Image: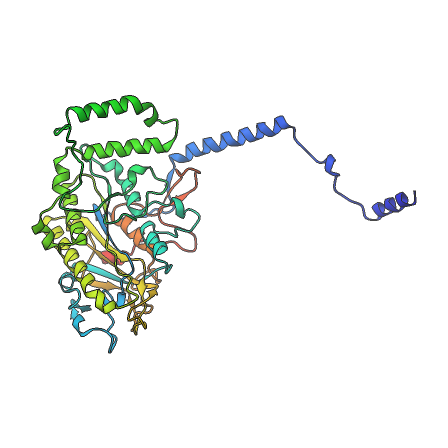
Length: 464
């Protein structure tokens, strides 16, 4: 047993402190399932407790100066140095832009003449900078106020959905319009993990209004239609209410109920239909019609609190000065008419208008294709809802390539998250709110927050 002796001498010289595999601690199968069952039960109970948990990271005082929000998304990314942060490039900027100092700001009076007449009403934030240069990513980022590719990005709700869920307790009996309306915005971000009732109601405005709001079999909605509705619920309520199949059937039931509220309702026709004469005043195009409907919906006071309008076509990698005048006129006609009507109806002081793209466009000389490519520097426009107009907040350098002056106490670029916080503050919502009602009980911040990077409202918009 020479080998055995050698092995024992080795062990005495190099003792092994660990137990052998079969001598290690272990649990029985019964003990394993007892522990696992306890863990699952505790997790479920914590989830139930968290479902009602809504806290705030900080004690802040929202401005609470707006009742409604109209958010205009300029999809495709407009050139900031040709529009709201005009920089005259010698030999490049068209003379037809007619650069003029208006209300103390250099303005393309030949491109956006009517908006120029409203400069005393609007505030232009020029120290805005995007996070990304991919259209779909940055557009979603602008709508949800965080990185869509981040850990909670796929469950993050639209800003409008947050406004809708926060303002739900303020809805009055009989208000049947959706809290969140999206016009010309079929690709708008969704409600995330929120119930479907807080999703955007997506409509493309037309002179026909919302179709199918009556039933030919029952013109008054009191006969066959009502009987079919009652039969539907008699058959389906066990599956729709506290559904054994979870959230989706309940969401469908909420959709059906909300849709029924829009049927046989004269307020729907008044708000969503319009005449050719009114359409003409707004530019007689899809964007103008959306601005017109937005004004009418808010005037109806039927529960809508957040409206998104999308105006695309700004992706001008080529022939920018051949294409910009037509799109500029569309924006100029629709936005100026909207501001005029909001002011004349008294809604302007209670409605915050926000306008932004997903990023800006390259500065200086044009590209070989006579266009401008993707660029991080951009702008945002605010008006109404308590905002102090008639000025620019922050500035860029001589070319418009980077923020030169922040004009803001945080002394850094303004990001989409700050714009989101500004909207919440105007609506009286604590932007530091954290919810714990997502399916896994994870903390969801209304505005992303960390010890090193806390976003917040652009307080200078209120003249602070």
